[in-house]
Image (cartoon, rainbow, N blue to C red; front, side, top):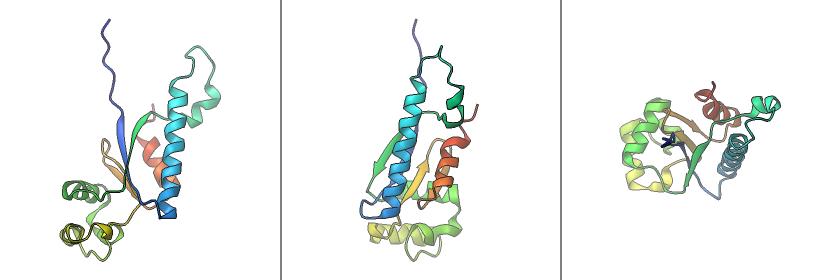
Length: 141
């Protein structure tokens, strides 16, 4: 019988290896991805009720050190609000200013930023509880 498999949600981490906050966010996302993969492959007949609190839906983790494209940046602003332009692009006053500054200098983009493209959410910084909430929020059954 032919089966359609649901594609995994893509979560992108805009990462900077030299940033401790970014390394912490990457570690958390890798741990959550591993837990999701482990939970998804458990024997269906086994009693895994003890794992219910830790269960996650699998996601595809995309880690990039590149700054976002202009379109990606606009999407991020849709998710978190344009008022936070300065939190994402150093010195930006608004969305248009952020796009301009990012085109001039890709290093003006403040990492880490974690983005769930499929569900329209983003977390600026390494706030563990916010990242976990983003991963879990739309995956509850």
